[in-house]
Length: 304
Image (cartoon, rainbow, N blue to C red; front, side, top):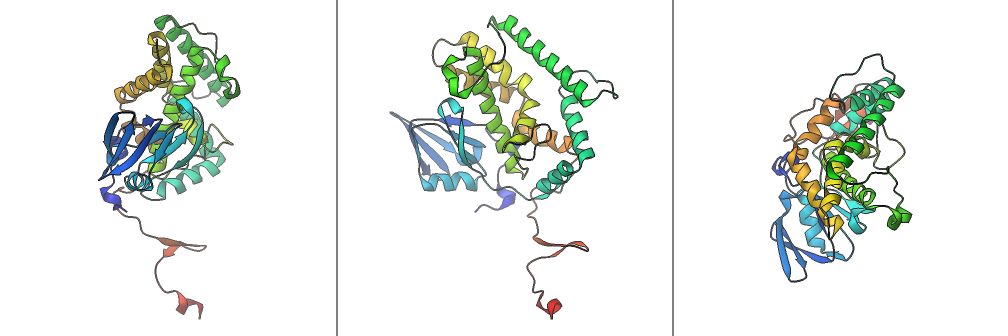
């Protein structure tokens, strides 16, 4: 296992890569992806999320190399639409997880985080006396205006968001593209959050789903990444929609330097001020009187 201080930073990595109908093997400190008559060699440390679609075979050695480089591996359905399972790389420590849980469990602190998450989506400041319900209503108006504007700019007809996985073929192209684009954004956000120790399930706005916090974070960036990527892809697509959507998403993610933004943005919203990530964390034991005591020592004399 690589030492924590040698692991790549989230901000320096590629957001995601998606492969299907291929075989993936270890190749030194890289992975080799064999697809038809082509072989792609990708350094493990450069990837943050590897999404594996149908028809993919990956070796045990390749998975081990990826996780040692803190790359999350996700097994997904066709076009990355359905998440089946995942394996995550090592996170540096539990400080963020404990801080997130504390903010989530305190109703007043949680409300403060929710308000800040909504307010960061608006270009102009809102009145401080607005209720959460009023802010949510304004957010709905903002998103409706965004869809209408992108529809006019790209020439893609917009009839509203209408997506059901069990009736995928009945959806129009723009709804399919939005689902594919959002799935890519969710994967990148999940990889970034888990790589530093945040829990994907402890959501503040969303609740009740294993990826509730991922949805919270993704909503901060949809207006400038996945949504315009979907409209642009549909307006320019004559062949494989899913491939074009993923390419457009990657362009948008790189354009706003998404991997450099996610963790600083969430740390700020959750008021987290932690230690240097390069420092290997100590292991403590929880104590009901003084919070924590030293771990890894013989406490037998105390019990005698």
